[in-house]
Length: 263
Image 1: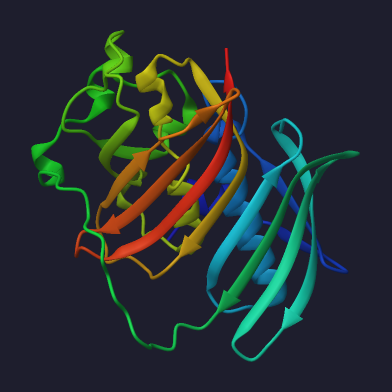
Image 2 (image 1 turned 30 degrees about the vertical axis):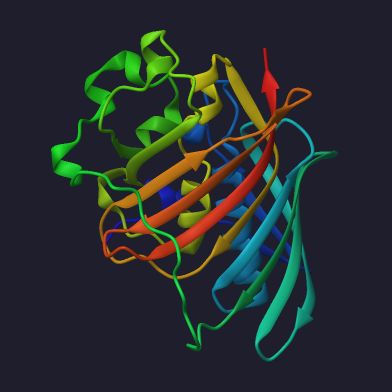
């Protein structure tokens, strides 16, 4: 089977001494014309895991240090700990002499143990009962990232209609375009793949400063139910929380990010 765009665009090639070469493409650009932060996270997390020959990623924390550009980049990785249960490493993304992003991640085998779920997934209609916002050009801003993800919404968001609801919450279905299987780096990407809900209080756009993702389990094949919320906007910064649930009702990932409002 031929590689799909996700495989190609998150791939990196080992050069030796923990350094890997990759190319950031414009196929994952945000409405700001820059590579999406979740896409950068997915590529860095995949490269670090491959370089360390580690188990599945469990948690990843990325800080964005400079505005990324499309083109050739370098991933500089370091193994910090190779424990029996947990392996931890870090990766720095460089474009020339510009340090773009820094990632700290831990990996480990899923060996079972107690599970207690006190949350509930979004109460969404089935994906085929929702509408595809790509059929309504005003429902999503013009951006190449929205060609890489399939979305299903229960209704058009208020901000897209010029009538922000005042409630910075969003619940929707997501998946990689065409239904491509979702691996752990793709789950990390999906935590940052939709328009920020802060748009529902009349903001224009925001940009992620720091993002931490917890990766709990691989999803069953299908769509990912997504809940996004913002509750605090302070001095031009805001948090954004995300939960990802698979179609079997399992929480598969969650995240929190700090973002800055752009006027």
